[in-house]
Image (cartoon, rainbow, N blue to C red; front, side, top):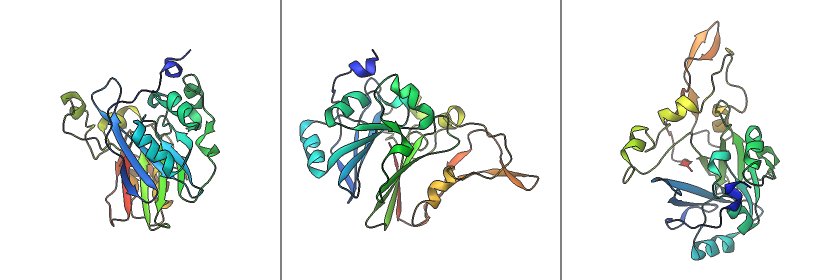
Length: 252
C-alpha cells in the first residue's frame, strides 16, 4: 500500500484563513518535512460546493469555518508529487480528486483519483485547465469573483510567491522566494517544443484570454523563423506585467 494512503489526517502549523474575495479563500501552512510553506486555495462555486486546490489539513476551528461556508466536493492536485495529504484530506471531507490527464495513473498509484481536470463539472465561478508546455501539465485555476468583475489565477509551481523570511539559503538560491517563475522550474519542468508554430489553444497565453479582463497574460519569448513564432530556448516561461488591479495571481 502507498505511504500516501497510510498517512493519517495530520495538521501542521498553518496561518489563519485569508478571505481574499467573496468566493476565494486561502490557507498557508508548513510543508511536512520541509522548511518551506505551501498554500491551499478554496473556491466556492456558483452551486455552493467547494473546490480545493491542494490539500492542507486544518485545525478543528478552521475546518468548521470552511464546512459552514460551503459543501466540500472537489480536490485538485497538481501532480503526484504534490499529494502527500491528498488521501486523508479527501477521505475526511468526502472529496472527489482530479488531476492532469497525463499524470492521473501516477496519482492513482498513491491515492484515489476520480478523473482528469476535464471531468470536473463546469461552473461559471471557476475553471481548471493545464498549462501546455509544462512537464506535468500543471493545472491553473481561473476564478471569477464579484460577478466576473475580478479574476484570480491560482498556480502551483509555475509561479512561486513564497515568503523569503525564514527560508533556508538553498531554497532562496533556487529562487523559490517570490513572486517569480523559478529558474529550477524553467530548467526541469518545462518541455522543449520542436515545432515552429505559434502557441496552440490551451497554452499558457490562453489562460489570459480566458480571463474576462484580459489584464494579465503569460508570455513566451519567441524568435522568428520562416515567419512563424518559435521558442528561443527551453523554459522561457515568464509572467507579464499587471496592467490593471483586476486580476490576482496566486501561487499554491
